[in-house]
Length: 422
Length: 83
Image (cartoon, rainbow over the protein chains, first blue to last red):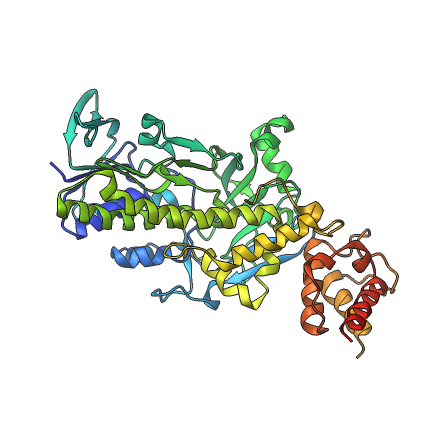
């Protein structure tokens, strides 16, 4: 028997397995697929490096030759205007690399799972959890799994849901809430011959704004030759377009001048994939005997590549709370709660940033050029949202938006979109 | 260099970025698409920093930014107020 059973061997589950194994706590990771398998979410913010250092995974990242990500570039919707930031300008605390990584998820997830295994996690692939078991008092104490055509019950002290966008436990417990503001849809695929020849920004993530509300395209280098391209729009824009996936995708490739240029010789090398369910939260991240981490707890719009940083940090914070709970042999909700508070507070800052950003797009580009706010925005973009209550720049952005809303004839008024800011 | 020249130079060089014919003081900056929303904010930052005039958030309206002349009038009115 393991003390902890982790459902899901993606980045959150494998990072948690690594932290627990390093602390000498027995844990089992149950993964329904057999890695390698494809997954969306291919770009990392810089503070993920700190977690790689913690769990001794940084050497693997370097050895395996993942593309180094030195910055980010945004492209205006209808002009050739663009804005770049270089991470080296403000390094992340405790991290000595001026770059982060772009990752082929099939490879990254496999390596991280193997890493957890090498540290001591028991790993079962191709095994699905069918339900979480609870004792008479309602405390989670095991997981029922399917192995081949047999079902087996495994007992443990704490169950962790790291099932990602499946939100396994959240669905079973009916604690999943869709976000009312963001209902987007992504269509993405891998391409060769995307023009990344610009020396300064070729290895950046590129975000191209589309001339529609909450619409944008990502460009993420996967290898020297391969680039991931994804269109994100409101789900409704896709439905009313009456186009098929491929036409819709190419239609948008033509709607931003810099994007059209980058894609002029591109050739698709993988099938199109789609993602829905853009933003959601579970009403709680912990309960008696269980903890939810990563996308299984909360997912915010991916425009700033926050997903893996949140997943890895949630694993770190959850491990701290789980270690404490095991020490005092008490796994009730209130013992695990500090983890939830910490994660929720951090992710709320991400969410608030994303909301203000979409609300009035030019503001971000404006504020990042104001010296007083630049460092704060950099810290947000690096993923440094934990261990703080509020970023003053967000209040300044809110104030500016209120001024635009209340000033008759303000020149930015028509750029405002329908997102409540309170 | 006087403020008007600085202003015209900045708009011509930084915001228009094309080899369009010379910018006249009465040219419509907004309707013609010379200035997009980002350009407006860059221009406001330029006026703050380089011309030393603080543009209040609520002053970013059509009548103050329609043309180089309009901006100059606005700047003059701000300076008169300060005296």
